[in-house]
Length: 365
Image (cartoon, rainbow, N blue to C red; front, side):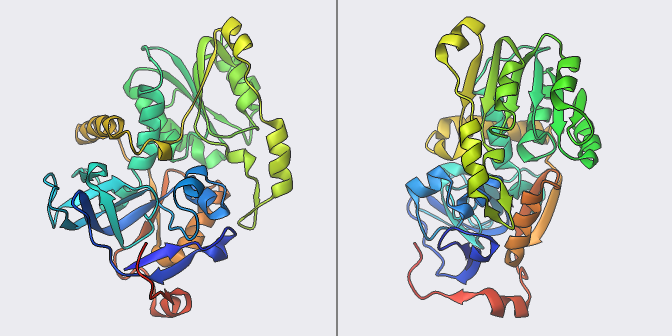
């Protein structure tokens, strides 16, 4: 099989396409021949060496990637819900950037018929994050006012749809003007374009009394003001720290990152109590053991997909061999929806294959 391997932290040059033996599934595992795999900002953090669950669970070398779609190639003796030849999608704790994924059976599901393979590959990570944040962390009521940062991205676009599905009023925030119409089409009641508008002046104008929920993965750039713009009983939901990791040429600017740490707000439980505000933080990669939560989320998401009331995000795809270009596109902030890698042959030209593939004789990890 072919997979992308990172041997140590760094820029785009650390993404190496290698050949490895195809793994053999265990009793409760499924071997999938992938058609496409999702690319997430967390994968970039893995490449930089700053993603906590990657350091804790894997170390170096590592193959990034949390989601995929494809065909079942082989199943373990205890697997009953899928069989060889079935189209599936699923999540995996790393090892996604590969033509073959060996995954726990509990994290593999039949692919919804409404999704093609590329859309399916980019669906689960962002929608599970959005679902867990909105529907498994807080109690929602119709009419609640919600502010969604990065509303044109993968998680943001999923959040906008899930909020509207539950009759919430949504204000989306985007950083590029070309994303405004996309977020409106997803159902947002209002869109703030940070490139042409003053974010917090506009946020205050649109919701004078404050927001019930604010979803923020930006980090120190916006967290303090996100909290300040909550109404009493409001909740700030944090699931990333994008601006904490300023980059240049595919590498972290560590000086700016250190300054970002100094700017990171500290939330005092005493003041939070008197203000009746709360902060909720989560990371999907530390939730893979909670298959009960993930299963409930996938069941609902698949039902809404089949009913036509939830749409998959717009997809931009790259060949597996062009993984560096995919990372660069995602880092640019210009993309809307999801970025995915195509893994079904031919995923690389012969010339590119000869230039990038490194033969590896050691058994697959």
